[in-house]
Image 1: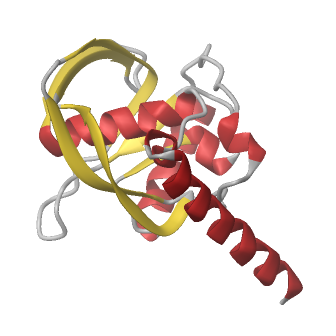
Image 2: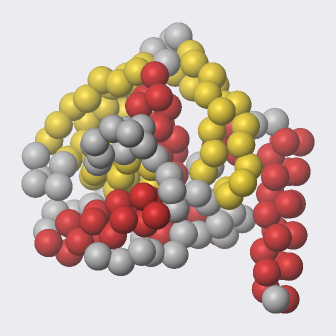
Image 3: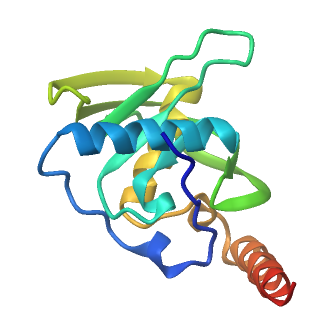
Length: 172
C-alpha cells in the first residue's frame, strides 16, 4: 500500500466528470487500499478517486470516531437513487480544499446503489453524517467541490487563498 498525492483546488482535474469503473479486479482493490491509507493519513473521513488524479467513479470513506473500530467503505460507481426533502447543515471540509471549512446544506437522507470491492451490487440508505459524507464524495465524481455549494463570494475567497498558497509554495 502507498499514500497517494492529493490534488488541491483549483487543480482542473478536480472539475472533470469521472468515468465508470468497468472492471472490479485486484488492481482496483489495490487502489482502494491505497486510497484508504491516504485518507487515514491525511486525516479525512472520505476520499474520491478524482482527488488522487484517477478519473474513476470510486469513493472510500470511514466515519468511525477515533476511539471506535475502523469501518471502511468502498463504493464503486455510486448512484444516488433518492434524496429526502428534509435538509441538514454540516460544517464541511475537504482534503482538496485544505484548511477551509463552511456550512453546507444537503438532503438529510439519501438512498444509493453501488458496487462493492467484490463486484456485488448493494443499496444503502443513510442519514446524518454518513449521508453528508456520501453526498460530498459523490459530488467529486461529477467535478463538484463543497465550495461549489457556497455563495460566489465565499467560493471565490477560498479559491483565491488556495491559488495564492499554491503560488507561494511553488516559489519555496
